[in-house]
Length: 152
Image (tube, rainbow, N blue to C red; front, side, top):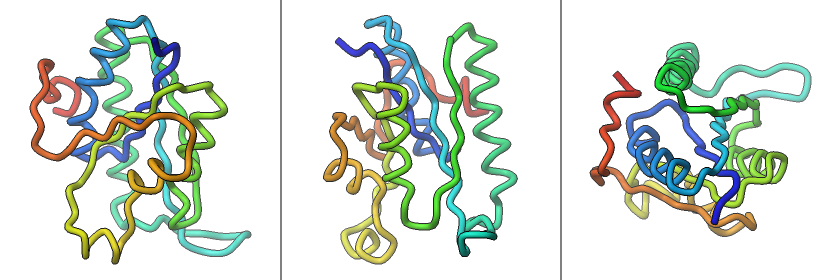
């Protein structure tokens, strides 16, 4: 059904909870896996700073996840992009279009309605602004494959 699946990750545990679904989908359908990570940047056109103070740790976690997948034999393409703060969903959608992804898989943080209003929701934007279907895995949902194997 799907030839290419994009797993959008920010290196968090909630993103990792979506990974078992991604692996099962790629295994069962033979789809190509694209792992996408967007670094949010705050600043102007000529200069910017990472939005998150632990940006280095986040990047290290994503790289570890990618390396752990490669060690287990998962063939995946890793794509990292920078986006201005608030444009993460747009960049994920552009990655999906660029790589021909027919499905975007994301983990959700489970913010309340007020929290989502205050800080926004990448998943919400993806659902409303992009053509590809989005599989949003909620916080705390267990899957058949252990996520710890790629997050530890």
